[in-house]
Each structure stands twice: as C-alpha cells, then as structure tokens.
Amino acid sequence: MVYRVKRFILIQLVIVLCAGCSWFGGKKPEKSPEELMSGGLSAFDDGDYTEAVESFQKLKDRYPYSKLAIGAELKLADALFKKKEFEEALEAYREFETLHPKNKSIPYAIYQQGMCYFLRMNSIDRDQTSTRKALGEFERLRREFPTDPFSLQAQRKIRECLINLAEYEFYVGHFYFQAGHYLAALRRFEYLITHYPDLGQYGKTLIYIAKCKEKLAEQETPH
Image 1 (tube, helix red, strand yellow):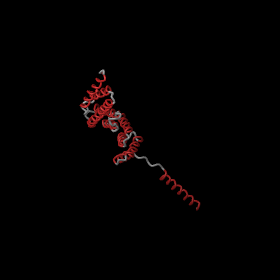
Image 2 (cartoon, helix red, strand yellow):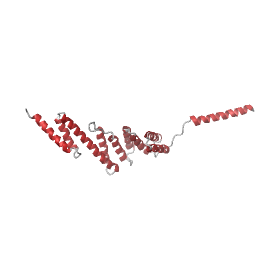
Image 3 (cartoon, one colour):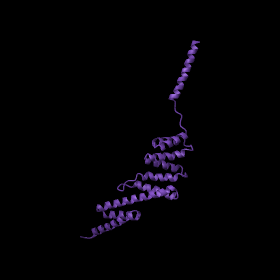
Image 4 (tube, helix red, strand yellow):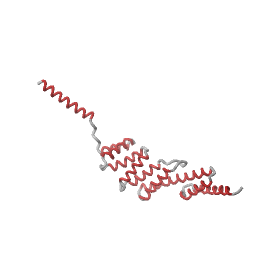
C-alpha cells in the first residue's frame, strides 16, 4: 500500500514538473496577423520604428497570404523611411510597386521613392545624382498619375530639384570661369540657360555668358 502511494506521488510530481517545463521552457505561441499589425501600428504611432519594422516584417514573412500582408508591406517601407534607412525603404517601396501594380497606393509608393532620393540630395557644390534620381521619380509620377494628389505634391518637389540642378550648373560654370577655363564655363552656362530657364539664374547666367565670350575673344586676339 505504501509503495502504491509513493508511486502515485512520484507520478504526480513528474506530471507537475513536465507541466512546469511547458510553462517556462516551451515556445510562446506565435502572434496572429492581426496582433502583429496592431503591434506594428502602435509602435509606428509611438515613434518606435525599429519595433514597427520587426512587426511588419514578421507579418510579411509568416503570413504572406493574409489580407493584412499588403498593408504590412507598405507600412514596413514607411517605418524604414522614418528610420532614415532610405536605401532599404526605397527597395521596399519598389517591391510593393512591383508586386501590386494596380494597388491604389501606387502613386504614394512612387512619391516615396522620389522622397528617398530627395532627402539625400547634396548641396550645390556636390554631386547631384540623388537630385536627378528624385526628379526622375517625381516626373514619372506626374506622367503616370497626373491627377493624383501625390502628383500635385510631386510638382512642387520637381521645381525644388530643378532649382538645385540649376544652381549646381551655375556653381560649376562659375568655378571654371574663376579658374580661367572660359570655354568649359561657357558650355556650362549655355547648358543652364537651355535646360533650366526661369529658375532664378537666368539674368546672372547671361552676364557670365557674355563675360566668357569676351575672355575667349581676348585669347584669340593676337597681342
């Protein structure tokens, strides 16, 4: 009898210990798509973009066929953008556009691609590759979705890009002029007049075009 009681107690103890292992050492249940989306949105609203990225990425990876997956893809790009991880955000917006070309948020995705470049534009004395790429995305948005509200926003950004490019051309032209490379300067100023008219540099550019021609004429005049 005593043996049976001891055996019963031992069995119960094993059961309790096993249950304890399950409680403390077992895997946590995976969050549902709804929980991941809710958590990601809350983190995004609170400014915790790292947590938001993690939640949206998990939803995207674990539940690719969920009705919330498309929204998670776009919010993932937004969270990366807010983190100023512009290259990663750019790729995420591009992927969204590629996978969902008919989605109503495509104009926004294109606009954001432009902004990923726009916010990395350099000052006028530096390389303007990002400016040109931003301009390309904004102009693409204007062509493909001319009446969309984001297209109207893009129009303002287009002007800012053009002003930056015009100022860059004037800076380079002036640099060449100061260095005595008058032909190179003339070509820059003429390019500016042709491609970026009415952006604030027209008057002073004409003056420098005249100066370049005078200097070139002087060089050709035999002394």
